[in-house]
Length: 197
Image 1 (tube, rainbow, N blue to C red):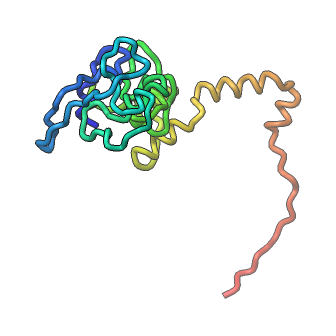
Image 2 (cartoon, rainbow, N blue to C red; image 1 turned 45 degrees about the vertical axis):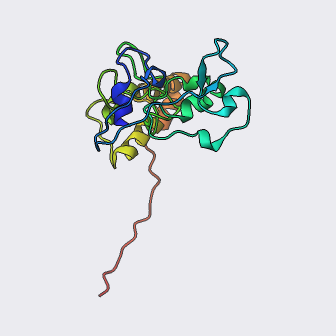
């Protein structure tokens, strides 16, 4: 994953489709393989081999066509024609752009949206996601990293919650508002307790 992220260009809008098809030395001293385009793609009119499986030619999928340990994930060009070429997977955010969605699990292979930092070799942090939702930096989230991402991703953005609350208050009359917030405590009977040991 780190090798893929590090090879995604830092140009705005870059994603997996911009990965070079090269051999890369990994941190464990092994090497990736180049992705082999072995079939004609029926949707590509140039006749260039762009398919990675027999299904690109309209035939049944052949399990032996599967390729492993490639910088470009084999599964993405394999099914890309059916899924808008998986636009946005391993996608970088743009400095002047926006989060199309705040996810509960910022996984680069997730189809929820772009989650890579615009320049650095990493996914966006919990705090960066929280800022995109309007949380103040002083707001605390609890649990492990995934728990915190879930809290941010599932939350109603605080500015939106505030705006909704204000509109609700505007829509009810002053009298209704006063009665809503007036603390009415019913009279209670005093109960005495005896200590028993």
